[in-house]
Amino acid sequence: MRIVYSRASTATQSRLRQRHILTEAGLLIRSGGVAEGFHPAEGVLLFEDLATTSKIPALERPAFAKVAAAAHPGDTLTVSELFRLCRDLVDIHAVRSWCQARAVVLRVLSGPLSNFHDLAANDATTDLIINVITAVGQFQRDLQNELTAEGVCAAEAQGRYRGRPPALDGDRREVVRAAFQDEGTSIAALARAHGVSRAAVRTALAGLLPGRSVLPRSSA
Image (cartoon, rainbow, N blue to C red; front, side, top):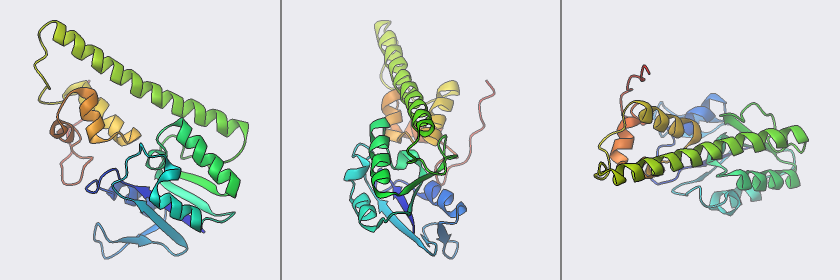
């Protein structure tokens, strides 16, 4: 049996990206061409956590309890992107241990860990690569937050900081778009990290959000 897990941070967050990835993998079927008209393909069980923050460990989420009840040895648990299931390295190890104990295969369809047939495989190579990739990703997020905080403090000390800047331009826009698209960072978290409004973040994410046109990439 193939089991699919999906998660959205808020009730209004679009699931189109997840559904597109899952549809391309043959796990979901689009019904009638309607954006929200998706249903599992034959032999697939779909479980969704809606309006569920990633701060809640995967194993404690309501939909994952249903996954646990449905899963049997030999089944495959699939997610579109790892951050939809796991928040950090601790959470990844918890899910991997859960899968190993139940002989369930763990598959990720997009992102740096998507080349693994089974992320829950109990071997030294898989352990090493998961540890390195997730540790580097966490380091990049922590460093960006630290640099942003230092920049704000420096601007305040020089009397140049007058609250949130109105927009994200140039390199900062590219950083925000990469964090949203590649790491799944939420709009609220990006707004806090960069000291701007959520509206400014949504503007910078034009082309990655439904109903917004694509902005040209910076030539820098």
